[in-house]
Image (cartoon, rainbow, N blue to C red; front, side):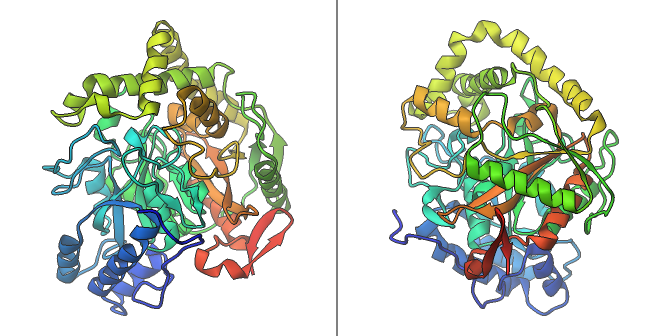
Length: 488
């Protein structure tokens, strides 16, 4: 269903949820100020209001979530009673998992995936499944077999991907936090498009999902998109308690900026040779100037990435498409129909077949990228980059119906900063810092050393303190300081 609204759109209202983030909402539930049942009912009403407009849902589980909310008597988990959605490439028992593709028949999962169990152990109540592009391959959530997911800030624009449904639902105020996962930027990209915090954890910080275990290089990390830094910090703290990986330093519960001086490298253009667009560049430069005022050492640095990386990652992207078409019946459903995959999946597979002979060397270089990155970062605490090479595009620009060669060129110009964190396993975070003339958020990315989510969260807190994340419901309160959007 195509929305008649022209945007922006939100469903924040004076109900049991209000404008609370997940941390505040959980605290009110624990204190008995509001019941989990009333919160769940409010979230369901918001979801039903939002779905015809932004199209962020593919399945709902309202009856079960209401029953669980009603039975919640001792909310001891950190986010007990807070409603959320799980992305539709992750199994929830009793709900279908279709991976955003017409090639996957509607099926009901017999069990809940290990990561979803880890997330729900924090007390979240799952209201259903959120949208994604086919197999998470695209950077916009525009499936060929259904309606596009729209950006609540401006409904004519993309919500990003592949966790586009999650980001749209959180930005619109349906829920304060939602599941996302990231194989090339799919937490950070939709967070950037929709003005949210998107933290990609270090590889091994959270439970691996099933797909990650089958990959020659595990590039996939699961996490959440949120409307506040403290919600992302709370998620990571609880995840770290659930899975204590001895190979990684503990994050702990980060509650604010550290105040210590950091050495931060700045990268403005990617090694693809495509220049970052002016608005995005100005936002990164303004963020760097602000960090310098806070006392940090800011230095231009070369991208911590070899010139071969874009082609190597593109080949790996093609390998994933090849593997899905070859093993879809085994990996997803016995009745998987490869004839139904979209133009992007087919194009990536064809590209991979033509360049198959390059795969061994590309895999070797991608596996080595963690060591290369660590060497580049040895003298830096963090690196500041754009999240994306360009501001959020209108719907249709990255549609899988666009001819493949043209679409692939557009994607490589757009998604040129996020994939490095996936191959290296490094943590990275997206933080909104400005708005375009079309009213769309522009975000910056920070990357840190392996295992150092703490530094990323501390930086995000420092930025949030003077640049509070804007809510759509408060658009009239936004003023500008230079090129950075601030809340009045």
